[in-house]
Length: 236
Ligand code: CTP
Ligand code: MG
Image 1 (cartoon, protein in one colour):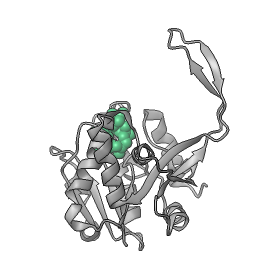
Image 2: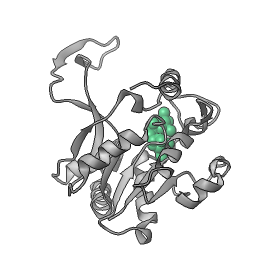
Image 3: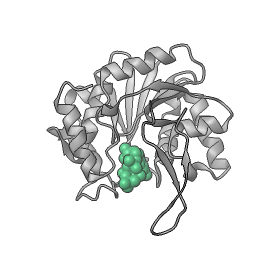
């Protein structure tokens, strides 16, 4: 079976609050999305990369250099939420992949993925029938707020065994498609924020593979500076 990448890039970047969607903002000299696109497109173990954008997207074509055009396809099927975009993307490539092909879903907003991290995930999941994701053990002390304003801490949530999920998240095509199909049928597509959640809803246990701080998701304006720090230097 092959590995294919699916990059949801149809968000508007509301929390970032910029003039253009964050995936197209310049970061370390290139549009944010180009970092992940080039990492996948240049990787020998990735057969093809699909990027999901919104139907009205006016930026993606300008990113498609000649070398990318061979290895990247644009799917203009973005939906209202990330999971809709992923689900629509999976359905759009149905005829181009086999059921057993592994799909690596990766946020356009994680520019720090590099070939070494990608290899770590692929190596760890080789032969695994469920699949899994990059994630990092939680280091903060966690508090459950009481929902009030100002908020008060109700309790401390033990962090032992807790991981913060990253992407890529890799699953066999047919399994992930079925998992999202079921989540949608149960009206739970909107409640999940990653692909592994849908797999868990089937009663399966995705493997947790150690990710890296450099693979952070750029969500708020200040995250961009940290992402640039990692992208510009030889940092872990
Ligand atoms: N995404 C998507 N389709 C959506 C929403 C998000 O493809 N309807 C993508 C984003 O482009 C991003 C990834 O999913 O690459 C993770 O989402 P997030 O970081 O939340 O990005 P945005 O939704 O764009 O940001 P915000 O939630 O602040 O608006
Ligand atoms: Mg979002």
